[in-house]
Length: 278
Ligand code: 1GP
Image 1 (cartoon, rainbow, N blue to C red):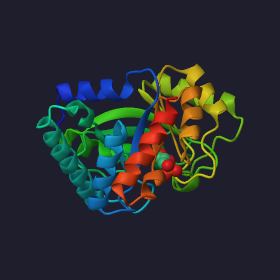
Image 2 (cartoon, helix red, strand yellow):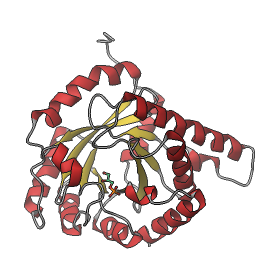
Image 3 (cartoon, rainbow, N blue to C red):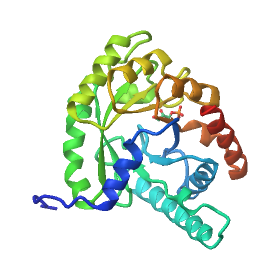
Image 4 (cartoon, rainbow, N blue to C red):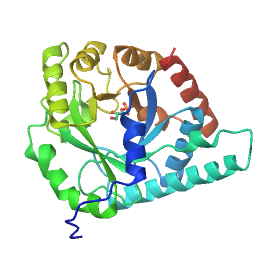
């Protein structure tokens, strides 16, 4: 610790910011792995299946029961598995090696669930939390570790919409309710004014309904940030609605946890991604 000097901006951090934040045509899919719900080995198998199906990013985190140990072990297992398939595909001239080069990012519940093995971190402000803990205190607690470990921070405004689930409860969020388009617009404008690169609309993991397209569209029209949407998205049709409303990234967590068989998961996600971009 004690690194107070200016930090060299590495090629990796530039690549990561460009990869995650630069707008593309169409939405991309990311899989969320909750280390509290699966072993590192199972997580790694699911990630290989997801990337093979066309997922473009892996997020690791959860609202409860994650810590330095289970997060670190999970990220190590995922990265080892992806490195292995990258190596295998480099030996096979018929397969696209670059497609396996997807970032593994922390999406942490707080400063006690980090890992130096992550490529980057969604460095987020839970903007509609009523608690200073999620607005700034956890971020301050984690910043020295993140700096020392060289984990690339990707600044992100995070807003929780109804129903909100565990994330809304744990984060003590004043939820964005159905139809509150002016409110979500104001948050998007504030996020852009802070200089964040990402703006995340969250309905809560396992939500009975995903973030409404009207809210996504209001955010889209109010800022130029990369829009991330997650919570309660289980079908390609719902992902397509979110993508059409303006989402750049669609996150799914529970969907992958329903499948233990990697081939089955790969097929389901492949169809999901195709429909999302249809
Ligand atoms: C992560 O909320 C998403 O932010 C994940 O939600 O588990 O419902 O896909 P699901």
